[in-house]
Every structure is written in C-alpha cells, then in structure tokens.
Length: 397
Ligand SMILES: Cc1cc2nc3c(=O)[nH]c(=O)nc-3n(C[C@H](O)[C@H](O)[C@H](O)COP(=O)(O)OP(=O)(O)OC[C@H]3O[C@@H](n4cnc5c(N)ncnc54)[C@H](O)[C@@H]3O)c2cc1C
Image (cartoon, rainbow, N blue to C red; front, side, top):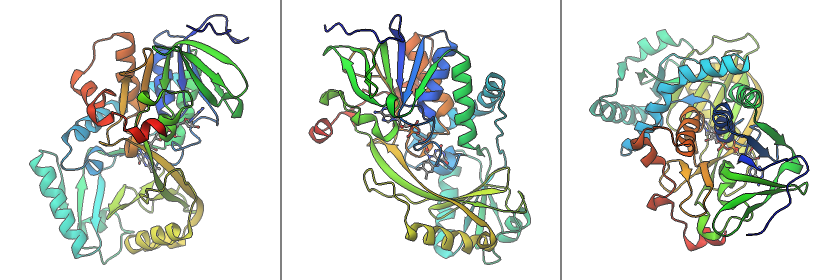
C-alpha cells in the first residue's frame, strides 16, 4: 500500500470523493452529504457544463422507453414518481424554485407513416397497462392551437412532466454545498489519476497537483466515466458518448405559444416557463465530437416547423451539442464496482439523466450506507451485470 501525502487542505481523508459535478454527481453528493458523509465533488468545469446543461428536461418514462425493455420503464416510472417530492425537497434545501411542467405529453403524427407508428405506440402502451388517449387532430389543435392544420393524429400521454435541467443543476449545487459537500471546479480540479493500491481506491490526484485521499470514490463523469485516468482496464465500464444536438428558441412575446411537450418522429419540442423552447434532438454515434453542425440546425427547424409553423418566427438563442453517456444495454450503472473495493459508479444515464436524477442519489446512497433499498431496481442498475463486462477494447481505451 502506497502511503500518499494528505493534501494541504485535507486534515483527514474524505469519506467520499465524487468525480463529476453533472446531474449524477450532484444528486449523489447532495444525498450523501445530507446523510452526514464528508463529501468532496470534483469537476474540471463549472457544475453541469458538460451534458447536463444541454438536456431538454423531459421526465418521460413512457415516451422514452423501448417497448421491449420493461426494466427501463420500471426504472423511469419509479424515478418520475419521486420527482414531485424531490423538487419540493430541493426547493426547501436550496431556496431555488424548481418548477415542474405537469401537462400530458402530446405525441403527434405529421404523415401516414407517423400516424401508423403512433398507433403501434398506443397499442404497445395499452398492452402494458399504461394510459394513453387517442385524439382527433381537431382535438389536438384545440389543446395546442399552434399545431399545423395538416396534423394526422395525436396521442395524449398523461403522467409525464418536464423540468429545466439548468435550474436543477443550480439548486443541487447549492443544496449539496449547504449540506456540507465541498465542490471544487475548474481546470485545476480535473482528475488526472484515480489512486488505488490494486485492490481498493485511495483517492484521486487533480491537475493542480493535490492528492486527495478518500475512503470511497464515486465516478459520475458522464460519457468520460470509463476513461478516468488511472482506472485499471478490468474496471473500465463500457460507457460511450452518443451525441445529441438541439436548439433553444425564444418567443419574445413570452410563454404560451405551446404549453405541452410535443413528440414527433425522432423529435420533440419542450416549452420552458419563460418563453424559451427546446427543439431536439439528433442521435449520432460520433465518439467525443461535440461540434454543432449546420445540417442539424436545418433538419431540426425543418421538422419542427412542419409541426408548429410559428417556430420560424422565434429567436434562435442557442445551438447545443451534448454527449449522452450510454451503456451497452441502455441502463445506468449505479452501485459498487465489481473490481476495486471502495469504487462506486453513478453513470450511463443515456437519454434519461434528468428523469433518473432523484433515484440515482437514493439508490447509490442506500447501497453505500447499507440502508434498506429497492432490490428490484438495484438489480437493473447493478454495475456488475454481464452487459457491463468490459471488452478487451474497453480495457485498452
Ligand atoms: C441533446 C440531449 C437531450 C437530452 N434530453 C434529456 C431529457 O429530456 N431528459 C432526460 O432525462 N435526459 C436527457 N438527456 C440526457 C442527460 O442530459 C444525461 O443523461 C445527463 O445529463 C448525464 O449527466 P451526468 O452527470 O452523468 O453527465 P455530465 O453532465 O456530462 O457530467 C459529467 C461531468 O464529469 C466531468 N468530468 C469528466 N471527466 C472528468 C475528469 N477527469 N475530471 C474532472 N471532471 C470530469 C465533466 O466535466 C462533467 O461536468 C439529454 C441529453 C442530450 C445530449
């Protein structure tokens, strides 16, 4: 065992070092600090500046779930059930209002192919016992008058919500800090090496040269989680980046043009409370490239305006790209590493990192602190499941 010097600002090892201050790292840091652990959260950027600030913020377990993946649906529905209480707790802890948009999602069809796909979607959800309501185009346009008259059909999906992830990040950073977590961000806090003695983690070394000792390390580094320097090959979780581009539009007249989350084909439009609209998103396997491209702006606006022609009148405020952290089976990894002792994961949230934020903190803290927990959900997110065994290429990456 190598004895490492304790960093000048550390009088004794931390209980937990959390790598990453995105939604995953912050929710874990808050939960553990509130439970009395000495927590330090490290990020090379300001909180939430990687993928979490890009998210559209849909809390959409039904419209996001693959029909052949009941585990994803179970996880998503459990997370959604936690959201109203979580938002209230977060507001109370941070003093920042975290508004939830609670109107049903409208899934709409622009042509015959999409109408058939919508009918298949409705049939599958009904067989699963999930509520959906078929709407005539006229009824959909009564609800959302900005929809194009050419609309072919619509479904109302109740029980889905939306939240602004940037507000959640801000509130989580305040709540975690107030609960006692120390959050160190910026280039000097980039983790340059995970420290371990071959059998258990001992801490991390940062770019500013600090060797921070800790009893446990939680890797919540999003798409970079499998590549934290110093992680032994056998512990490299196979997390890959899946690029998504989206646009933020703004109505200078304020909110109200569209009130509900609209889903269409592979796209969506998510209204915010202040007159902004998020129009997304692409799904691209392009490694760590996160450039925004002209074709994405073109395609997103073309598809969105076919559905809501008024979008073309809005201000284009942001073009964004983010890297969704994806695992081979699409479920997150939340729990202990099967390799190094003291190493924990909170990553792989793919398209659902906002939705799953409340559950991520609870499930990980339950395991770390030995609290009673939901074993069925723990099995879905277990980092030791066979789908997450690193391949030889993962181990070398
Ligand atoms: C276009 C798009 C739309 C989305 N829409 C939704 C949605 O509507 N609903 C939903 O639920 N989810 C959505 N998501 C998914 C969601 O954004 C992610 O699942 C979530 O943000 C992942 O959070 P994270 O904390 O794991 O990762 P991140 O936010 O990427 O945080 C990881 C952090 O780790 C830090 N880091 C990495 N390596 C190091 C290192 N070596 N040292 C120090 N720090 C390090 C990074 O700087 C980063 O801040 C969307 C994603 C995209 C791209």
